[in-house]
Image 1 (spheres, rainbow, N blue to C red):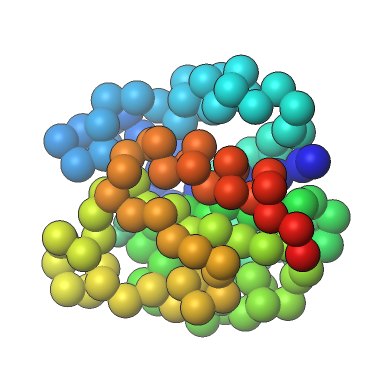
Image 2 (tube, rainbow, N blue to C red):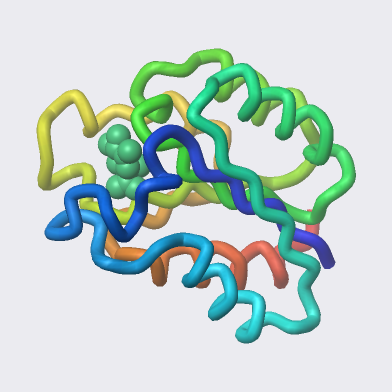
Length: 141
Ligand code: DQA
């Protein structure tokens, strides 16, 4: 199986960015851990700070991979275009947020993406990505 992990804006700064909220670990370092955890899965990773690039990647791989794990960062709360891209492709998606967005500012409580996803993992730190990958590995369309 192959699974695409997409991180949106500012998530390239994980480890450095507001560590009390997002932790001390970089995503690239964490990715090595998940790769070792799921040797049978081909993990593809993409990060961009640009909305259109996230959409292009969903179009490019979203008909081919077996699942998409997406943390769209702040675009979660603003982007109808990313939501439409998830609807357009065939791969099932799971939305992940590292922090518990429901315990934060009210503008983080709404997601345009959740309705297009099989499920949402929120507030469990980086472990949320592992859980999403595990779910998508067993998901049958
Ligand atoms: C986030 C939560 C968003 O509200 C925020 O804009 C992010 C990260 C999270 O993983 O907790 O950039 O998606």
